[in-house]
Image 1 (cartoon, rainbow, N blue to C red):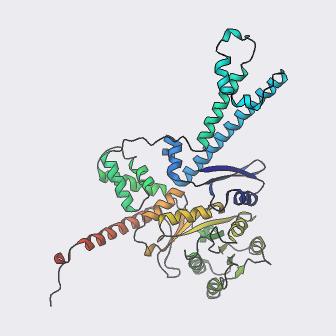
Image 2 (tube, one colour; image 1 turned 45 degrees about the horizontal axis):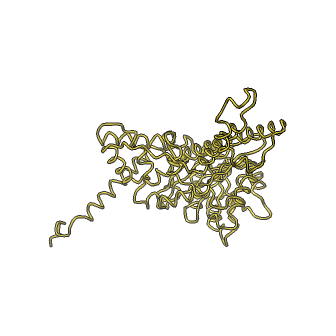
Amino acid sequence: MKVKRFFAKSMAEALKQVSEQMGPDAVILSNRRVDGGVEIVTALDYDENMARQSLGEQASEATNGARLAEMQAERHRRLEDELSRSRTRIRDVRESRAARGQSYTEASFVDLQEAASDEYKEPSSQSASTPNYSDELARMRAEISSLRDLMSGQRVEPEKPGVNAVQQRLAERLQEFGLSQSLAVSLSRRHKGGKLEDGWKQSLKMLVTGLRTPHQEWLDEGGVYALVGPTGSGKTTTIGKLAARYVLKHGADSIALVTTDRYRVAAHEQLFVFGRILNVPVRVVDESNTLDDILDELSDRHLVLIDTAGLTSSDKGYQEQLAELARSHHKVRTHLVVSATSQPRIMKSVWHCYKMASLAGCVMTKIDEALTLGESLGFVMETGLPVAYYTDGQKIPGDLHHAEAVPLVRLAIERLKISQQQMAAEQVPDTERPRETA
């Protein structure tokens, strides 16, 4: 895993540096404002299990993937700062020695550690007032070598054993629920003792606590919201549902729709259909109209919904579209649209792909088509993304729901029971199934 820190005056410049130096597969571990601009910490070949191992016992504090990434980024900053301080101390020693007329070659510096063990075996042969430069340089060289090993992930502390039978069974049950192995193990280990059912209830409560949902709906709060995600995730249909609900509640005079999808032929047709039906204006971002120009014109609207192109990191306009949202001087709250039918690895891949857009939350779609919901709940818990809405059908706007943690977990439990019943029915031999009588 390669971790690197970038500094720039603006988010757009920082993202450009990441793209040029790390490539499209880079994962954003953290981003924050610093003096003079922004700082982004990125990683290549990022693996959560490896990150947890490298953090050791500290990883237990990370209740989700987002927190784990922040801790990994903070660890990298600390190690990098310590490495910089060690280099500064070595430079100071070099300059001090040069000022005293004691020069040395680069080769002798490489061998300082060995030289120190021979040259300074007899303390009596050295003057008490003479600084032990070689010994100090050797010590700092070993210190830098240790820091480099830590930063490159070569020294990994193994996880401590000690999982009892109840915790093991609880972890297996949570994985049947749909959670990832790492999250299931993390939750099960918090159950220190007692019955399996007690641990199950405790884990579900922790799931409810870990799922973040906003108290206020977009329709009432207002603002500018952009939906991003892959093609087919349901972005445009979700915007149609949101717009329809808003028009029914507040009317069509204070809402507008915007699309940034200028990369596909006839990409705007569905959104324009929604606009005509609801009598809501639809604006298109193109070469003549930038996103900020359009948002300036729509500043009097209470709610603006932005539809985006479903691009991946390999598509030509991917970086351009995300940078356009990131550098806007308007407060654009970007939300990731995730299909509940996607595999967990695909969900995580989509999150990595769009993470640099400074995601404010997510919308879960196609809940009705998913066999189980534990995968989706585990995903949002690990990433720390607040769930704003979820959809469970094609009805507009009926199948759009404001997300709440308790109902979502209950719905996931019901889906698990139905799935288990179906599996049990499939395992019953034909000879044992009741036959219809004439």
